[in-house]
Length: 497
Length: 115
Image (cartoon, rainbow over all chains, first blue to last red; front, side, top):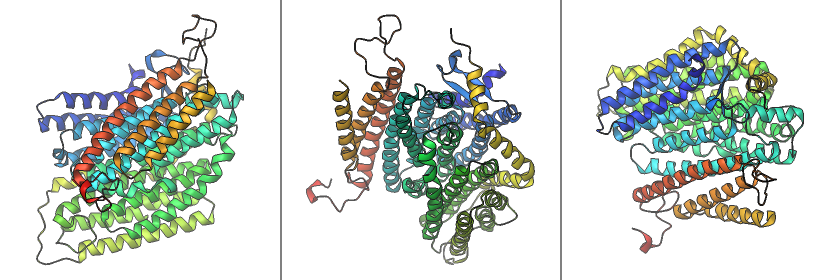
C-alpha cells in the first residue's frame, strides 16, 4: 500500500476534478467542499512523501508494473518531493481565495483547478520524457481555461497569445522528443542518460537538435528572455487566484530544465553540453536585466508582480547553469521563496483591486484603502525586494554567496534596487495619494486568511532557514549524482529475458 | 520513400509556420493544425522507415518499432483536443473584439468586414 502513495498526488486531483464535474446540479458549496478537501489532503500527502524522500532514497513507481525503460515510471526523489510540497502549500491558500467568490464567475473553476494540480503534480513526478509532454499538455489545457476564466477582452487577447504560443511550443516539444528517440532509442530519462554514459548514442547530431528543441520549449514555459514576452500580459490579465496559481507554472519549466540538467543537458558525456550551456548564462542575465527594467515600466500592480516573477526566473536560471552544489541549494531555497511570495503578491493585488472599483490595480490615485492592506503590501515588498530580515533577503544572500561572478552580483543587486523603487512608487501612489470623495468597499477579515497563510510560509522559511538550507543542500547533492538516479530507476527493474 | 516523407513533412511544417505568422486567427488555427500533422508524420519516422514490416515481433522477418505508433496516437488525440479548444477560443475572441485580428485590433479591417 505504501508503495502506491507515490501516484496519489496525481490520482487525488484527478478524481476530485471528475467528482466535481459529475456534480451536475451546479451546487457551488458542494463543488467547493470537494475541491477544498482534495487540495487540503494534498498537504499531508506531500509532507509524507517529503519524509519518505528526505532519507535520500529514490522511490520508483512502475505504472502497470511494466519494468523501465519499457513502462512509464514515476520517480520520487527529493526534488520532486520538494516541488510537490510547494505546490500543495500554494494550492490550499489559492483554493481558499477562489472560494471567496472568484469561482462563481464561471461554471467549472474548481474542476479546472484540480486538473491544473493534476498536471503540475504529474510533471513533477514523471520519469519519462513523453509522459512529461502529456502532463505538460494537461496542465496547459487547464491553464488555458483558467486564464480565460471570467470575462473580458483583455483576457481573451492574452489568452489567444498564450494558447497559440504554447501550442507551437507543444509541437516543438514533440519534434524534440522524436529526435531524442531517434538518437537514443528510448524516452525514459534515466535510460537516455545510461545510453549517453555507455556511449551507445546513434547520432550525436540528432540528440543535439532534439535536446536544444526541448530546452527551447522549457525556456518558453519558464519565460527565459527571447521567449518571455507573453508572461506580463498573460499574468496581469488573469484573475487573482489564477495568477497566484500560475506562480508555480514558470517554475514547472524551470523544474524540467533542472531535472534534465544532470541527466541530459549538462551531463559530461552529452553532446549538448558544449552546445547549450554557454548560451543559458548570458540569457539568464539578460532576463534578469530585462525584468528589472520591466518592473519600472509597470502601470498596474499585477504587471509589476508579473515582472517580478520574470526576475526570479532570470536569477534562478543563472544559478542553475552553474551546476554546483552550493548554487543549486541556494536556487532551490530561492525557488520556494519566490513562488510563495509572488503568489501572495498576486492575491494582495486581487484584494486591492476589489477595493478600488473601476480603477482596479492601476497605479493611479484612488480611494481610501484599509490600513491592513497597506501593511501587508509593505511586508510583501520587503519579502520580494529582498530586504532583511525576511525570506527574500536570505534567498538573495544565498544566491550571491553561491555565485562568484561580478556581473551577476551587480545585476541582482541593481534589479533589487529597481524593484524597491518600483514598489515604493506603487505603494505611495496607491495608498497615499487618495481622493477624498471616494469610498472603500467593506472588506471581510476572512479575505485576508489565504494571504496570511502564504506569508506564514515565508515566515517559517526565515525561522527554519538553517535546516531548510541544509535540506536544499541534500537535494542538490542528490540531483548532481546522475549515476545514483540512473541506478535507482533502472536498477530496480527486472532483468530482461 | 525517405525523400518523399521528408519533403512532405517539410512542406507541412513550412506552410504551418507561414500560417502561424499571419495576423488573423483562422489562418493561425490552420497553421497549428498543419504543424501538428507534420509532427505526427515526423514521430512515425523516428522509429526508422521500414516496408512490409508489422509492428509485431515474430510475425515476419523484420518488425517495425511499435512505440512511435503509440506515441503518434497520443499526439493525435492531444492535437485534436487542442485544435477544438483553439477554435472555440478564436470564436470567443472574435465575439469579444469584433475582429479576428490576433491582437483584437479593429482598425486594420475593411469597413465591410467589420461585423
